[in-house]
Length: 153
Image (cartoon, rainbow, N blue to C red; front, side, top):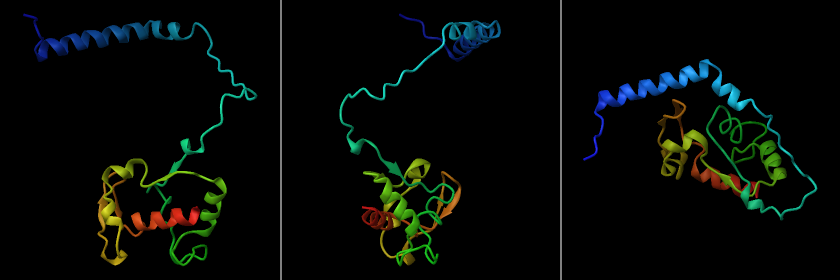
């Protein structure tokens, strides 16, 4: 029967492994191995491989900083349309021609419940947004994202 190490044996072996790697790094072994030949990349701008499928490229909206509130959505702003969407941002995103837009994006997605962003805004819950440790009012939610996408095209 094969011997499996207990916790102490495992940790002792792990420490020996770490010490060996540290000693190798300290002596410059890792740096020497990586520095033997320079790396280079060659880009051939005239070489045609195939037509690029535009559906491969996309973007996302994330509740980071001011990307949503005061970014794409700012009710009451002189730059906003009647729905609260910033017309200057709409114009720029339309010009980019982004074929796919994802919402929510980034870390915000891990705690987002799409149901919190539908229905009348007055009835939407205000929740603690755990990715950025902030309060999420859900005033820009699933409904607004869909409407924003329709406006962007």
